[in-house]
Length: 334
Ligand code: UT7
Image (cartoon, rainbow, N blue to C red; front, side):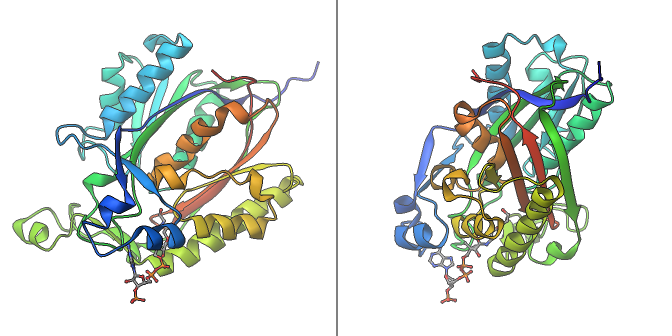
């Protein structure tokens, strides 16, 4: 019998969203904005915020991982690897993946962080899949978490309505029935540094009284420019993926990064995807950076059937972007 290729498949997924809901109405009391502007220009109605000052990103990631392990009867010792994608680690070092592993009792696994901006999850998924396809690891966790509220300036109306907090954990396992991750197109350039960055806090401009006073430890974004690049790059790689494999745009689910409803609509249109197959949760979750796609999968996991074709596409700081083609591997996910 023909030996089928081992692929990495999502066999479980959980997410954690903090309880506090920051509404557009509350934001419009903080800065000069309005519900009408935010909904019509971005598509966001509300976002979740981790209010507790003494809790970092890993608080949410640990909740997601522990729920995943409890619900699926996974013992910590079974996990071979943990990759955490984030731009808001608890600390510069140690890696948040190590903090998460320790809190979840995962003692004998490799672990590391990846910072690929909003495109972190798709890069971490592909990286984890290489460990699984090679046979080096059997069970891997990809954990994407962001406490964006820790790097957002709530006096800046250009950025503060856009982002939310949240985390999701995905279990990847080997799959030999033809489902799982089929292909990946991942790209980056340095062009985006000018348009999307945090000015201080790195080795170039370490934290100082001056950097704090100048409010340089927050997200800076030239939204108009990022918008244009996001539409063209996400559409280009996703169309390339469909053409490469003869995928019918009417039959796939498209799971785009949730940065702006107008970006999502424009990319879906260029790809020729039926609007009901373009999955959206930006209205309630906002932009949780690298966590948007796994939270979107989690919100929709009960709708997917084994063999369904999913295209995941993201774009973010760097710029870095890409597209993954995944065949959903399980029926009736818990
Ligand atoms: O996840 C990483 C990748 N990020 C993205 O993909 C985000 C891409 N960019 C965007 O989504 C959009 O560019 C934004 C949502 C950030 C901004 O929308 P826009 O339609 O591009 O607005 P703009 O920046 O061109 O600003 C238009 C106007 C400006 O006023 P003037 O100069 O025309 O008088 C802004 O000052 O809207 C103003 N504005 C606001 N008004 C009310 C900007 N933010 C706000 C606000 N409320 N919150």
